[in-house]
Image 1 (cartoon, one colour):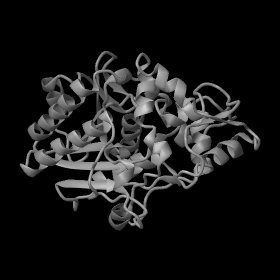
Image 2: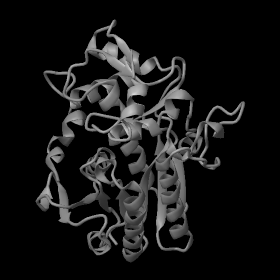
Image 3: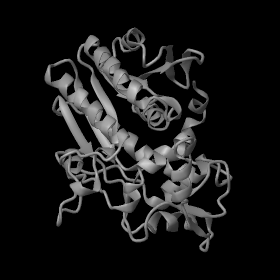
Length: 339
């Protein structure tokens, strides 16, 4: 088992792609699974043919790795209940066959409902009771239970890093790029889904990837480890709006409300709206993850200030033009063509 070889499942997605780039820059050998695109070495990454739903192909791709990043999800929100748990089972079996590789799962806040925050307790730690309100939340709990059981029987090691809503220069499937702004368009308004005065937690993907990379490189973690990120906590829903306005240099850019009633009516036939409706509670009540354990382990949490993070995101999403994009924001251009 190579000390610094990783298999990334979901490398063409937001967090999977960010992890592939980050680990590659930190000296890792990176292998990625592709269902239909060309294989071979591209952008420094070894692409191999396979499907996360096919156990043998995942085990083959995982030969010799010490870490498997499980960042794969069914496309277009379809058949989550039938596909997500079997995909994790394949990953855990591949990790065991690779000699006990560590499985890294990018986690979410979906495991928790607003009632988990007790009076006087400002945020949620890793050991708080998990009481998901949604179908996706229940699936997330099931994935983590699979990982915990596999680690307990010595099949693999497991690492879960939970964070708020993702945004970033190469992340096109999230609230930031699909609701607040629209990828590929210069914003004429900001569409905000939250209630006035309600806090919301954001996570800048390059920071998430750096956090995960630092954790997987440690040799002092328990076999089953969980960490929360704080990311960017927008305490009243105005900080993200203000950052977008400042970056665009349009201080009076209008803010419109998200059409929740229309989304409810369309949700039976539009999968995206159905998924957005499930997550509505995160915009109605403050649900914040506590990163004390992460800070105690790493000393600090990787953190890009909000305005530079928003600027890189708007440039990467095609919402803002710039004469020269920073190296960090442009690193993924080659990988963006991957399968």
